[in-house]
Image (cartoon, rainbow, N blue to C red; front, side, top):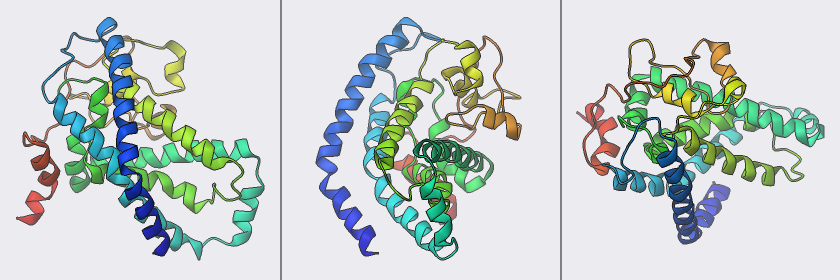
Length: 277
């Protein structure tokens, strides 16, 4: 618990610096993705659209709050498995080549994310949290930020399970730097796959998640619900039977079947309303 407290203190001390960093990233992405969406849109949409300020609020909330809860969740997981996995196994993992450990981290993390994401659609209460992300009826790069903080914590904690259980980060010899690069790239990619871009990437779409792939995940059309859960590797959806990517097409409509309140504060409370009576 003392280690978690120390991490919380470090996170709290870094909040002003992190907020400035988030603001800089937001401005850079607004310029890059905004220009691309204006030049190559799936459909014409206003840049200064409705609920943009709300999504900016989600951006900062999601960037600053979830790490505090994720630290506690992963620490609890590490404590739980520490007595179940023999030290000799961790020693073996640490002896593996650096590239193998990084590859295992990326692959297993996306498989775990797939199931966290799928459960968020199939479990009634988890869906109340995740429906916040699916509420927009138009997609653009900033929609990526619209997510309930507890939804983010759940997805990140589950994604960390195989990494913690298998001890992928044992014997750190630069792996922390690799993790930082990986998290930065996957975060940027998450913004990219939400963009209002009509680009189709040919054979690459079989190897990596693209805007078209993720647009179909947000589709609200008969026969398209609950598809395309992976964040990086679309073939994971092929393995588990949830792949859907029509050639040269984008969805005609987006959104969720759950109507949400208009304000950010009420949206954060809405998943608990029925349970609280």
